[in-house]
Image 1: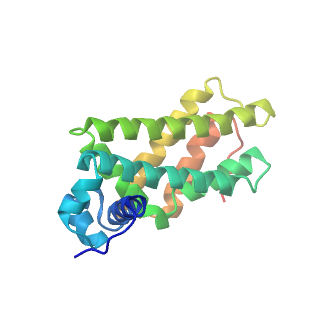
Image 2: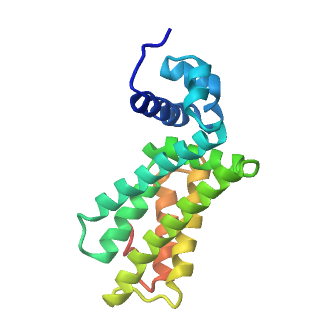
Image 3: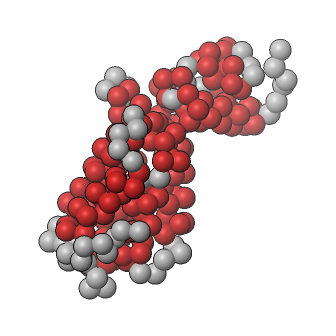
Length: 200
């Protein structure tokens, strides 16, 4: 029998169990029984604290991907130079050590076809990424470092390429350095930068 705990603490533990399970085994593993086993409680107790499993899956996805974006924002703060910030962004977003988060994204795109709650969460996080990357590109344009006729489209292109290359990385297609060079070359062209400007 599970130890009696404060409702807020128990709910937090269940949400944490869902996030841990999503990162270690993927979003499809975030089931009533899976979360209960990870949290060390009964499925009935999970059901008591969760509005629906679709809602818990969407919340786990948002927590994981939101934390990733916060972490990358913090890493870029160490760089004042716009090109250095984008160079760091490329290297961080394509880092093989982030494959667990990449897998969560890929799961969410697939599962979101059948869960509108998850699809809404995915779109919201994609919008957050779009706004973040757009702001980085726009700042470089304002400083006269980048030249792009449509910074919004450039941001979308960057995110789309990252998503595709990271999905390829899940099946170990090519190597991380090659994927980073490919993305850097495409972005250099898009932003009017000299070849090699965004390569580490």
